[in-house]
Image 1 (cartoon, one colour):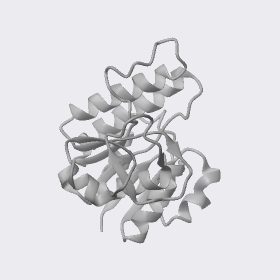
Image 2: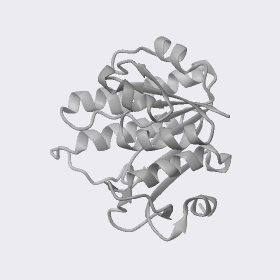
Image 3: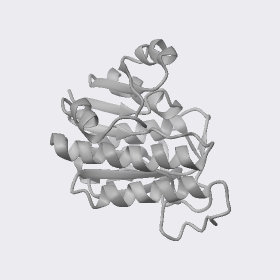
Length: 215
């Protein structure tokens, strides 16, 4: 059994993930912002903790993460203002990484996006630029952190049923069900060979565990 802390615990991917982790016997804590979501998160088998990651400093985050074996960052501002996107997707994520280092929690899995590269090609006047820029900064900070990190870059997320099948480095948009993204996160947490890797993926024809081993 592992103790896993999930930031963004009420997101669609996170809700799938929490069910998977709880079902295999992990002890899951889910950080959420809205107390109205506590019951839904608790129904997955996770323990909800209501906190606003925009306002927590590194010391508070260090206390939060300290009792865990691994951290999953699946939080995001969900669009809206560029200011809030940077506050959550970049600054909040970076503080959580610094807190993980301070607390000695080495395993960290970042849910990023398939296009998170310096040459992502999103122009600054595009509404999506703040997200692309924030995620890139967070990913680069994680790579330099010294943590046992895995960065996951799923393609366009869908609400289709899980297939259990993916393709690494797909062409195009790399559409993939959120349920399969959750299954990839769960598999990565159980596979230390993925440490130090950035794994971009979409739907495909290869079972998840097999695809990850081929990376």
